Image (cartoon, rainbow, N blue to C red; front, side, top):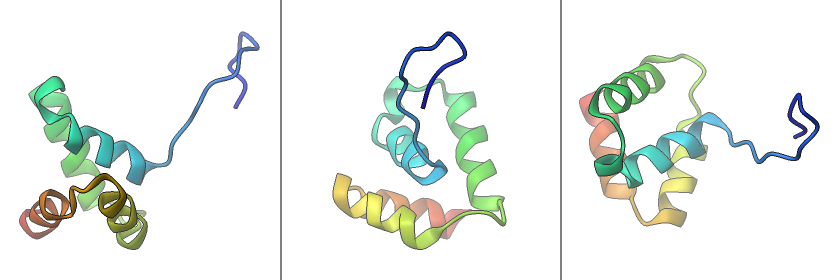
Length: 71
């Protein structure tokens, strides 16, 4: 994608962002983490299949499954 300033930037879908946040939870602000994860899992626009595909690629299936069950 091209930024408003004209530079190329990489963008990800929601599922990839959630997986990235779960992978680096200790580096993420706890309030931001909680809000993002809760917002995603309560959203009607989530794609659980795509989320689990990313989780498998990043070897975090168990962690993602835990959040899916809790929320």
